[in-house]
Image 1 (cartoon, rainbow, N blue to C red):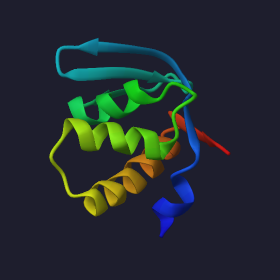
Image 2 (cartoon, rainbow, N blue to C red):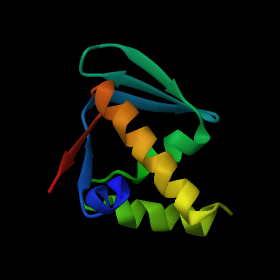
Image 3 (cartoon, rainbow, N blue to C red):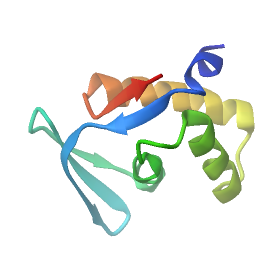
Length: 93
């Protein structure tokens, strides 16, 4: 249900800097806090381009990974909440 509300939102990164280091994405948030993300979270953040909706990004995941769609939607809700809490992501629309 929450994903249905999120799916047409456009996520925007709000970071100072991002750097890929092998499988780890290093992100400096606007608060100057440094976060380290695994390859899955890195794929999500690298897919955030200010144009793609959450649904568009979900479809990219479904093409790349073999995962249950409902499970992915639930994971997206959790991940988006966490990224918003860390002030790395905002939603528009």
